Amino acid sequence: MEFSYYNPTRLIFGEGTFSQLGELTAPLGRHAMLVTGRYAMERSGYLQKAQDLLEQAGMQVTVFNKIPPNPTLDVIVEGGRTAKEAGCDVLVGLGGGSAMDSAKNIAVAATHGSMLEFLLPNQAGKKRPPTEATLPIVAVTSTAGTSSELTPFAVVTVPDSREKTSLTGDTLYARVAIDDPELTYSMPPEVTAGTGVDVICHAVEGYISRVGNPITDQWALRAIELVAAHLPGAVADGSNQQARRGMMLANVFAGYVLSQTGTNIMHGVGHPISGRCPEVPHGAALATVLVAWAEMIWERAPEQFATIARIFGVDESDDKVAASQTAAALKAFLNRVNMDVTLRDLGVPEDMLDVIADDGQRYMHHAIAKTPGEVTREHLMQLLQASY
Image (cartoon, rainbow, N blue to C red; front, side):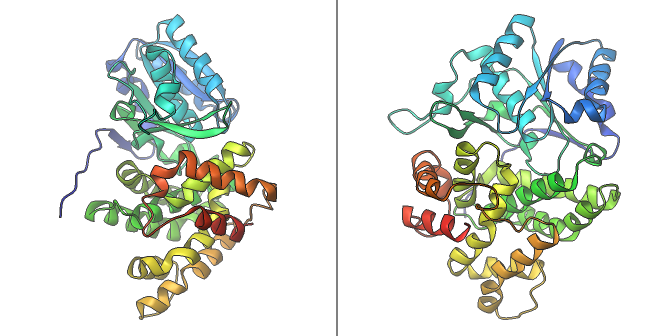
């Protein structure tokens, strides 16, 4: 057995740790660009608090609060230009995955010029990794779901081709990640549920993967257990501190899995869904395919699927029988958190399924290849049709 494990991000976890933002960021630079979305962090008051904490630590602050859900390359280019002109030397991503991913992308755009060579593969099928010129990044998550604060990936959509792709490289690891459950208390139920589904998918895709290892397997199982135990409570009552803390911890464990294994077939079609239909939230896109995924490939890894099934309440000693019930157990769980949705429910046109399958093969093939067993275009269509 041989494997490697690398995650250099310093994690600060716990209620109230957001207050350390200034002291943790100040050693990394003098002028921070604070990257966030358009509304949530401002309405909650955390945007102003972040600015105050950074300024109290003696830093200049430029606020870039233009990040939409499923951000596109044009806003990244604008952010990079703004950071360069202002003389920013450290990026702070505050918010959900879109904000943190955008901070990472802007950290590259501010110092590297054209972004396409990092986002699109060359003739050899490889992307150029960003260099050490990437500005340092601090990531503060306001959701328990994307784990972007702990991974070397930064997702963005290229408008011309509608590819929801990503930068990848070690320089995209945040220097510091702050996971304060208190920031999640104001998340509405639908966002709590959607980001929770993202945690499930990161964990189960890493567990059912060609590239998993004994360390990621343990993190994945703990993440799945925590989601099963705490997501319904967090959805039902956003002020449930135990549930919020459990989900933030699940997000951490799943993040450590994601940073090592990446994703596979579910994200392989999930990203193209949001790339073609940017109004579809990432977690909802994944929710549509989760049950069909389990139904389609449980026989490829029956022991692992049996373990997942039992975590979600299947009481069956025979592994093969338990594994065969995983899809039904996941569907029941999605019902509990109001996420049992279809692509049709989300407004994805049926005639777009072929395009989404083609997109998956074209630019998500590296992720899809991590799925156990053979995955053909026919399998992608089978998964999408079963999710419609």
